[in-house]
Image (cartoon, rainbow, N blue to C red; front, side, top):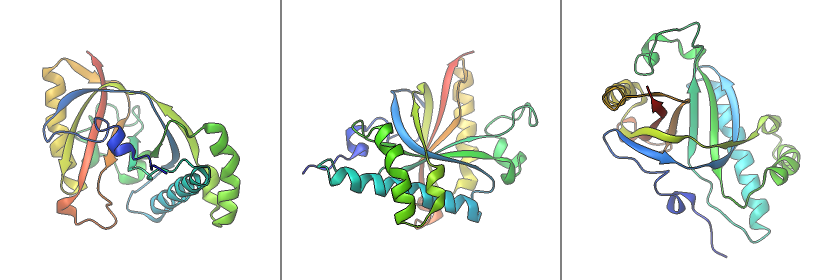
Amino acid sequence: MEKTDLTKQFKQYFTAKASPAVVDIQAAQFISIRGKGDPSGDAFAASIQALYTAAYGIKFFYKANEQDFVVSKLEGLWQFDLEKYKGIGMADAPAKIPRSEWEYRLLIRMPDYVSRKVVMEILPEISSKKENTQVMQVEWLEMKEGKSVQMLHTGPFSKEPESLALMARFMAEQGLTHNGLHHEIYLSDFRKTPEAKLKTILREPVKPV
């Protein structure tokens, strides 16, 4: 049985250059879980655990039906209250907005043959079997970001504002503005990888000014 590996099947989606570039991101489907608060806190870790528990439960269900896949990279959509923090750009947001104020939606991409109907049907069984009630908070998400600016950030998350500033300058030069949520794809497992070696794709959906 051939195992689907989305990072190989969709190389454009899971790769980025070390400098800002414009890309076109096609539609994709995900399981997701939403939350708010400090990403170094227990609630964020619990959200990750619940999402991965769901992802592996879905994987094993499909594997039993002759459709196996590699559980994909963790991703995150990030936002804050634009009215409350009006005028603060994404490059300045990490320093100016308390970590407790950030809202997130964590994502794991699913192969095209995985269906929303099946996922919603098997989540209660996965939740019960793994004794993790938070699995029931997992949602289905379909997303098409389209035209986006992205780059590969290497190093600690605390240094991301430097990369985001480069992206903001590039967007201004190209006559582009934000058209969606700040998106991060964690190519490294940040729970195990030294900070200096972390690799993260930073992506911003855009449109003409």
